[in-house]
View 1 (cartoon, rainbow, N blue to C red):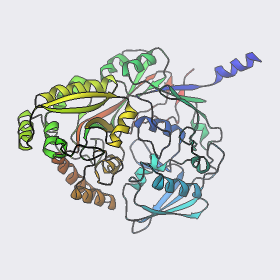
View 2 (tube, rainbow, N blue to C red):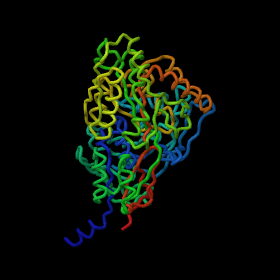
View 3 (cartoon, rainbow, N blue to C red):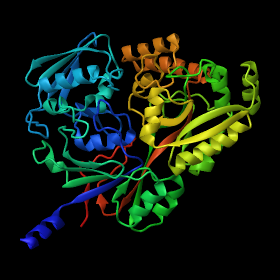
View 4 (cartoon, rainbow, N blue to C red):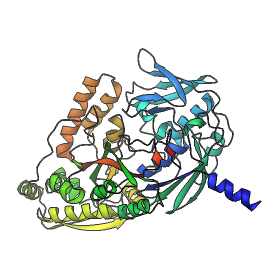
Length: 490
């Protein structure tokens, strides 16, 4: 009997994937971490997906069409799909999911799909989304967490966060916070033949050098977030391979303008003080010191790989102008400032470089280290002054800017508000004409250079390290690990 058991365990194929931090809650409607999206990509099919060129392709919806006025989106759904608990996926399940994303207290998807007025079931496998207004970004939003389909009966239970049930190729098995998330193959998956592992284990390891050591020792098969300083090490290791792509994501400093218990006298309520802080930072030098020149300095949310990237030079560091802006704002220097920073070595190094640069312009920066999920929690509650954090980026520009900058955006943690910017952002959702959208995003990005709700610092390449035994893996601009077609050489 024992022989059989060990033979079976040998035959079980497992892929172990390193992540830069532990995801937050495993509910796509409540989650906000980049790392959670890796788990969702394996566990929760979306209505639509993107290909490696960021073009929207079928997922659980096989095809779709728009009405002439672009206010009704009709989707035909894949037949024969079941959720991990055996529930049937159909039009009613879609209606349940979209309504949950729009109404669940704390849902971070509300502003992403706020254009949806109602969901109409027009057949067992057909739904119509009735929109309040045309929304050019909606399809793209449905390729991500807003379009993830959860099992309705399971999602009604209070323990869904700890026992998530979706319809993807892998189902949830177990989780130990800060240690591992284990998924197992779902045997009734509609496209089972494309997936070759019995188990997927996600291992959160915040320190990039420790992740690399685990990869080299064979304790990880694949890891995201190879540090720029480790790229040459991976390239020089005969057992490892490197996969790299320019990402859609950015890192920046979010200023708390009006969230939570902000001091009414906070100097950061004044846009001149925010602009001064931004001007104190030399983005080129930061890239060289912290990232060996492999990253791309930023002054906006829209990455150079986005067709909507606004061609505007990144301003050079200007300490004199920063000092004069502070003087004009009536600030006495040195100004004491607290910057929240994730407790991993890369973020700490970035924080230290910013600390040194900002001090020359009159800012005395105190770094406060925090675990990633709690940093986001504090940011959301407004329990911070400045926070070094970013966004993993979305294929449609709306997904990288609206929620953070619009007055009603669910991720607008600084509570920045400019009615003119809101107007441009809303107008960019209403048109499918790329030229019109480009003009509107140009306006927004230019306005944000002085309003400075977020001081954008750099765009991140997505750098993966993997064992040469891993076959068929490709890095995509959205930075997620897609396991279809990935296998392990024996």
